[in-house]
Structures are given as C-alpha cells and as structure tokens.
Length: 129
Image (cartoon, rainbow, N blue to C red; front, side, top):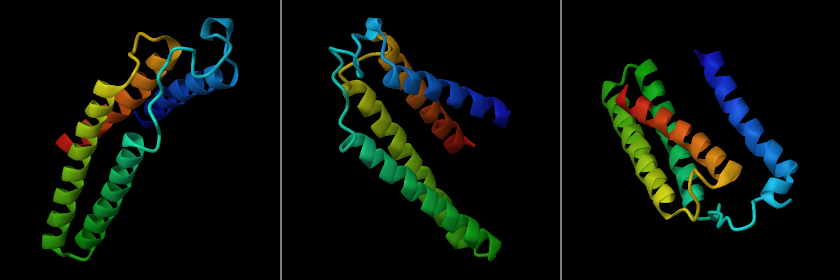
C-alpha cells in the first residue's frame, strides 16, 4: 500500500516537474501556461504549510506523552492535531474556491488539483482514523 502511494505521488510530481522544466508548444512554451493566474505561494499555501508543520509538532508531542504514560497530554496533542488538520482542509477548500484556474486548465490545473486533492484526501482520512 505504501509503495503504491509513493508511486502515485511520484508520478504526479514527475508530470508537474516535466511540464515545468520542458514546456511544450501546447503550453505556449512557458510555465505556468499563458492565461493561468497562479496562486501566490506567500499567502494561503504558506499558511497551510505552517498549519501542517504545527500539526506535526502536536502529534509528536502526543506521541512523546503517550510513551511517558501521560494520558492527558496525549489527548490534548491528538485534539490539537485533529483541529489543525481540519483547519488545513478548510483552507485547502478556500484555496480551491479562489484559485484562478480549474482542473480543466490543461496540465497545470490537472496536476495541481490532483496533487493537492490527493494530499487533502490523505489529511481527511487521517483525521477520521
């Protein structure tokens, strides 16, 4: 299962990177393609990255509390991690809503939504589990 997940993400990243490094005539010989209004990485994507890093800190805190037998701090760590992941998913949907392109906007839109959608789905499943 893990190997198949790695291969899925690797193939999507490869499609994105190949198109970015070697844009074809279909893309107008530029990356991102002409007419695509890209999302600024310094806004919502940066906030989402910070939220995911914070959730990693809180889940590590919960793990150490579990090892030390501190059930209260374990519970707090899991609750904070769950809330942060839920916040990440909400912001991911906001990013989709206000993006200046769709999944049908060629290879740029399809790889962006496939990669971020698959990642968001993993976060949703992690929260449920």
